[in-house]
Image 1 (tube, rainbow, N blue to C red):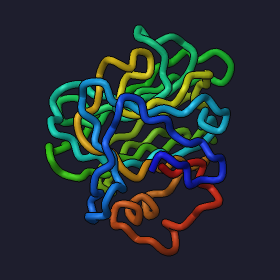
Image 2: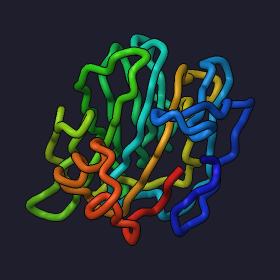
Image 3: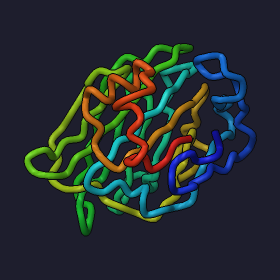
Length: 219
């Protein structure tokens, strides 16, 4: 949905016509098809999307081709990535890639995780969790409810004032475009644990998957 169902009303702008389509349950107009030519969505900078000490991003994607580098979501600056914070979720050669700059005051360390086996024309759940609280400073990458990669980090995620962009490169929205469908983007202001990630993947709609008080956005 273009309307943010979370508490912060960070509604999306649909640029160039991503098309409403049926989602993975067959619900009409609940997902969006990106054409890989010029479609993308964005929401203006908001401090709550800086993520900081702990956060989770979860989304469902169904890509036509998983080989080209295509950005799913992010707010990172232009490469060579400036040391101004930010994060980026992509798919490249069938793998899920997460990039982030880490550093509380002046981000100085870039972390990249790359793993998984995303298949074309198949719904896939991708999730990233982050925690910056000793001794649990980890970024963890998940695909379909399973941990596929993790790394220790030295500090909290760095921040910037860029828009959050979906379906294209954040620094140039006519590049690295997504070709396929995106649905159910959820961003939380805490690290969701592995049990909750599994619940999201298994479409459990009660209990741990109803932690709305920690949900920043839901598109």
